[in-house]
Image (tube, rainbow, N blue to C red; front, top):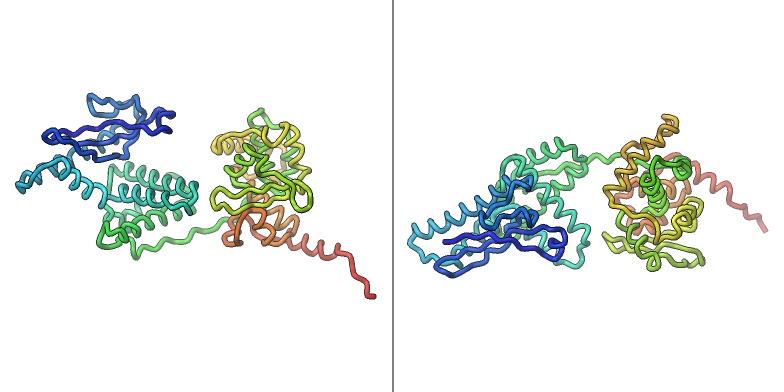
Length: 408
């Protein structure tokens, strides 16, 4: 039996210079393609002649160990068929390999779960990417405990405890620990439904609810100071300007980037004859309706500065968040301690700031807020904002400012 790994690249991988290793076996001149190994590397890091990943890949030792495990599994299947005096063909080896390596291992089951999830047109691409990130994260955890794979039955409460402990050591937020644990349990439950295992090892595993932290935001006073501040570099200034737009549109990162790339599609006159942003959210396709003209005092100077919405600067989410932290370090030198800005500021706090401005500083109700956010309900809205005394004060102020109707 000849075992051969070979590299294959999709169009996207070719642009990035990466590849995925595929596998075939040949017995008595007949081939059987066993498909993807899910092991990826840069194209130049694969030595076809030696059948190994070069040390240029930082994870070469781990990945080559995975390849050796696959070889060992195939040789074990071959020897078992030989011992039982059964006919040995490439297709028979493939069948036994897929039964052992796909149906009963957790990471392979996760891949099949992702494939089915992506095939459902009702699922958003962003949700698929989140699930894929969880799969990669769990793979990193297995790598940290020197395991290439575990069978699904091994995903029990003990292993989950080790997983959570590992995540804590990597300083992941509690909310993310809970979210990824739920995904792992979801995949195990799905595997049971697909009859990949006889029992659900996490059936009685209870995942605790994360403690919801008080939302962090910039109030109107802080944002006005921020918008007039001169930051330390052109890149920081661009990030600071973008953050103001996030604070007065309430968009997530990708949604605003899409507005900037195609403003003609999303900016148009509303029923009041003034400019609104109409943007279906990438995640849910529910349309957000933002009367951006109502925030002209902060938004218009920035749009004019760059020469239009389509000329606003764009940068990756990671870079933007990095520059925002530099901006905070610089601006806090000019603010009293009592009014300083959160030192770990990121794009998500722009959405929080928008929600705080609408709900508390403008004292609008949640129904109008969720319409602007592109949500169907106020469920979990407290992740972004909570009513406070500022909202109560402003609501009463609006009541007293209403004109009184005299009796006829």
